[in-house]
Length: 70
Length: 180
Image 1 (tube, rainbow over the protein chains, first blue to last red):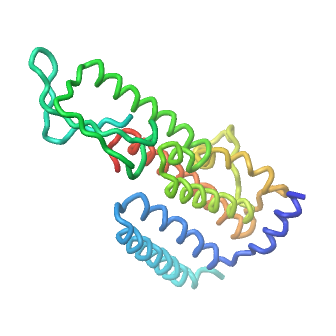
Image 2: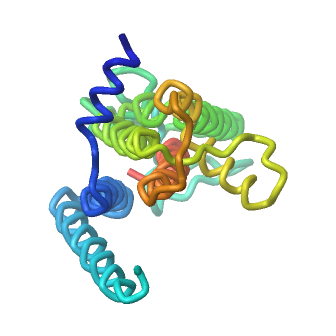
């Protein structure tokens, strides 16, 4: 039964590359904000800023690597 | 009991009497809490060297226990210290990263891989504690790094371990009283 549930989750979680990157950026940004900021407002600002940088740098590097991808 | 010495109020041991010291006690119990529900002030309390040693030894033991629990189950060390929100956050973050890595069929490094990079990979993976042993449940078909998704999964699993190492260090800092 557990294996069946995991198969369902796995099929539902067919992440694209962009989806995987967004999930990674979200989780790591929140953790870094929690570790480095002492106030809630500062943490939210840091998390949003870090998430945006993760995504922008990731997309930028992807575009730079696009010519050598094929 | 939590003992906080007031900054700037130097305590001297030996022949001279100790100056006035404030002792704050958490009313809820022995665990450190984010917001103490009550604070009691004791004036002219004398701290003996044995008190100081016992306090530091207690803090060290608490830090060691919390760090061990934080490594075994991400977030559990924070729960021990009464940081429920932070503990839940680390559990979700580490668990989310590592389970996503397994579902992407990332590679899980075994303990005895034989090469330095494999050993580093094992250390990173094993840092996620009990989640390391969940791989056999989530990756019934084994890893598949022939696809890009599998390679991403390998990074997710390693990143989860690194995040948990940061969580363990955070627990140690909190238990040692160096972080609020």
